[in-house]
Length: 216
Image 1 (cartoon, rainbow, N blue to C red):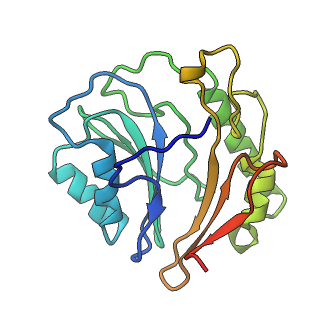
Image 2 (tube, rainbow, N blue to C red):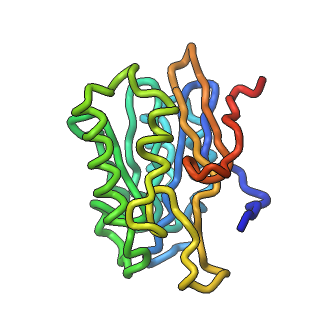
């Protein structure tokens, strides 16, 4: 199922300063509507000139209305922001320089997070295993290409349908099914900003062509 989220002011992307954002949706209580909607928070991140500046802005404005995970990065590094209306937790890069995250909180315990997607912890463990596999093969740094990431990680179907490459679960009502709709890989070096976008599920044989940003 394809859908368009109309009217959003910000979500996944990067800016000319080399600040990029991604989002993991999470269900947690409470939601406080007087605080920033997460998509406004994402827009503020994309109007920032660095990760540190984005963090300062969100902290000064009193936090985000709902519990979510925003992955933000610039040329100096990445930060996992587990935001919530009751407090934020920040995840630093691990010993491999990686931040891996799926659809549940790893460290944020300020809010109540009821069970939602049972496959999220499994997907996170699988992601970490696949990344370590690349490193053990000597594939790291500049050797990591978008093609390798799509073929070795983002196309993975372990524990399907709740896999890294997610498929609709026929056991769930069609109104609450989810699946991977696209894949984006960004390079945030200020003098070499680019991204590759693939519509559809990587590795399925039905995905679209690789689209490169800035658009040709």
